[in-house]
Image 1 (cartoon, helix red, strand yellow):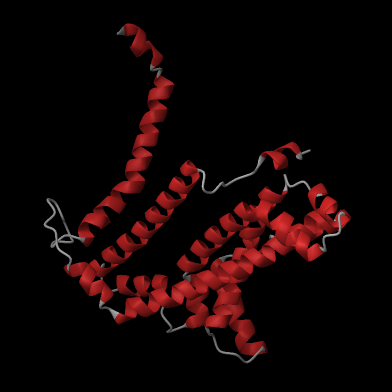
Image 2 (cartoon, rainbow, N blue to C red):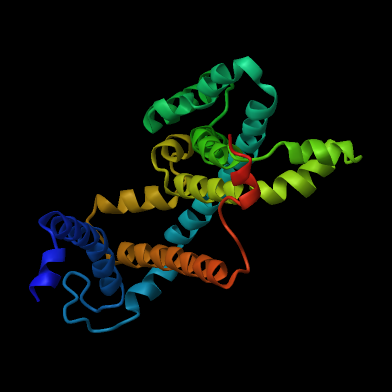
Length: 278
């Protein structure tokens, strides 16, 4: 017994205790909100008395339905635009920028250092004073794209850093056009980075409050609807809304885990890119 206890050093015990406390701090509120969403008493659902009344009230609320639809539109289109633009910009930086690559990189990551509130206000002023346009979904998508572009570029750059560009050169030597080379050689190898950039930018645009609020005004999104509801106290519908979002996220993670474990899909860098790293 003393031998086993001797392996548990104070540092290791402290590390495990810190990890346990951190996970409790992160996930206990999620568990509490989940129980409150399916309980009759949402304020203190212990022991829980199960009921679907709160979920029914959520799905019958037209405000949350409209807000969810607007958030999905902003998140999907902003993620598509930022991922596509960041992918093209990253390829250009690593293939054709040359000595000016640091300058272009500094310009591309500049939005990282601008607060979201300032980006929302500046976009509103630019649209109103210089273009004479009112805030709408298109301007909100474009502003979120500017904000998410830098994050997508950094994510894709980590994938392309190990990419062997000689594969593209070999394909074009054997007669493939640049477009065919991209779609049949480059894209199949870098798609995990593009997928990661899309997921991250979608979450950022979907959850964004400051930029969308200034450019949409009274048009509701999910974050603005939740923020507006907080002024009148936390309603049970917000618990149900948070639970639905968490369930969707956990379901997607479970699907990705099963696909990776079964080998149907592979994520991350491949051996040929690892060997090409300098």
